[in-house]
Image (cartoon, rainbow, N blue to C red; front, side, top):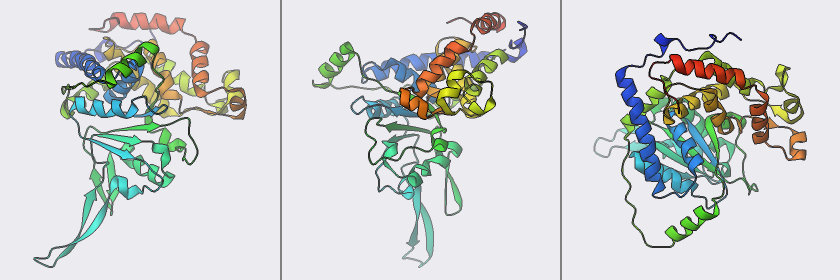
Amino acid sequence: MDSSIGIVKAQDTNLAAEELAAVEKLQKAYHDLRAELGKVIVGQEAVIEELLIALFCRGHALLVGVPGLAKTLLISTLARTLGLSFNRIQFTPDLMPSDITGTEVFEEDKATGSRSMRFVRGPIFANVILADEINRTPPKTQAALLEAMQEHQVTAGGKQHRLPQPFFVLATQNPIEQEGTYPLPEAQLDRFMFNINVGYPTEDEEFQIVRLTTMSRSIQLSHVLNGEEVLQLQDIVRKVPVADHVIRYALQFSRLTRVSEGNVPPFVKDFVGWGAGPRASQFLILAGKARALLKGRYHVSTEDIRAVALPVLRHRIVTNFNAEAEGIRSDTIVKKLMDYIPRQQYEEMDKQAAKIIPGAKTA
């Protein structure tokens, strides 16, 4: 492969001075946010990083973990540190779509006798939405989130109502208790940029959790960013240059999971029923851009793509019966792909791209 192929042109990477300043601001905001979250949340370093990457990419996230791992506390604390409006929706079997989006009510003006319909906004009208135990409600109610997540609007009575910006849906799900639940449809799962696994804390972390939460303490959280600043930083993420070879590398993670394409690894043919779509490739690049900035670089490398591959792909790969019989999960498929896709030629091109990008610096 020609070493010049896929290298970003200098004129496409000449970030303006104000943009470079904004990049520095994003890195500072990232460290400040982690410091504020650390006042409340013990450990969960990878979870916090993935959540903040989704935030700066305008993405929604699904947090999966057993009860008691501070998923709800993490999301509510994040909203407080950002100074954004926050609503929690507890999903239950009797929840209706209008309970989320809002409904039109009939009103009569007693003074004039005139009658009219007025839209009463539901809890979806906030910057940060915690969809708690999203798989506890029927599909028709889950689907009420689809338009809001994709279009950032709600349609009621033939009228469109725009949602406040920035807007994030952060949903939680319990993976161990499936009785009486409604698994999310693939179309809705695909709207979530990240599927974040929230694991158990280490022994030292659990010691700190027990010690801190069983004593009296007062925690003061500071606002790190406001809504307008979050929107500005989201724009900066999309301006980060990315070389063609990095896009090609990201495409392989998606295309090699599609059994119907033919030229796929044997383990994909054996264990995958349905592969990832183009949205996976888009999110791999966007997440790679955000991670590069958070790590202090102004260009995306293939290492960034590998780092975000699991949360982007794990809910977009549908394993088949053979995989279920052998206990193979989608995470296993993604890790096998990391080993299957050759790295050396791409990593050499990463080094060349870093040398010619103005203002670039290594992690």
